[in-house]
Image 1 (cartoon, rainbow, N blue to C red):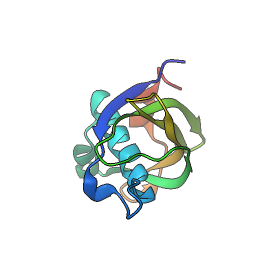
Image 2 (image 1 turned 30 degrees about the horizontal axis):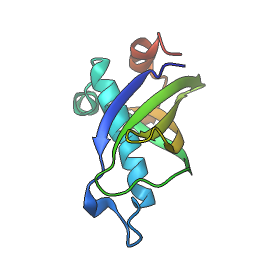
Image 3 (image 1 turned 180 degrees about the vertical axis):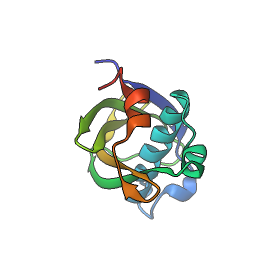
Image 4 (image 1 turned 90 degrees about the vertical axis):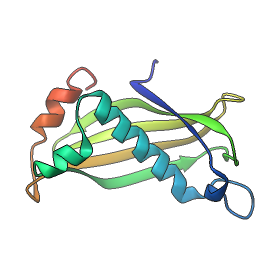
Length: 133
């Protein structure tokens, strides 16, 4: 199945731990960067949304580590699929190393919408993501 969105990134040496692997916390950063870039592609700017009182916030993260990334690896972070669950969106994401096509991590990230600080129906996101859910 073709991913909804892909974003290419490169591991920076300072993201690695003493074993030479990317530290686990950085995978969440990669997933977040990709979601922000996806929002931009949909015409939604994270900072502008915030200034309008609309905040997309992570409510839950589940990451499965498959094969470690190393310093200077180039990879694609993908949004493989999305689903709407009540007041949240779940982004199913994956990280694939380009040199060998190896799946390095998968993530399921649940995002909710706050409008002026209150959990709300994400109408702006419903419109932007209509073709994907």
